Image (tube, rainbow, N blue to C red; front, side):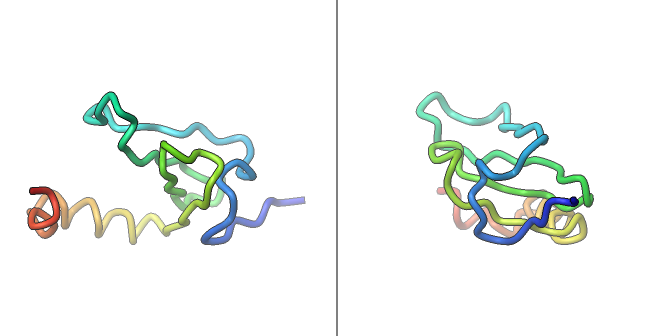
Length: 79
């Protein structure tokens, strides 16, 4: 049976994926982690609450977000 991935599902219920944390994450654990799902979608979770909810995005949604971050679209949120 193929696992169904839904927004808000417990991240701990997502089996067989490797969660990756940014190398820019600080020592206090304030970071998000991402994992590629078998479907190609991307799951995102809070590293401080690894069993908490995961948000699931399509590759196109993640690409748009990352490109926006590179372009400075979210700089107002980082200061």
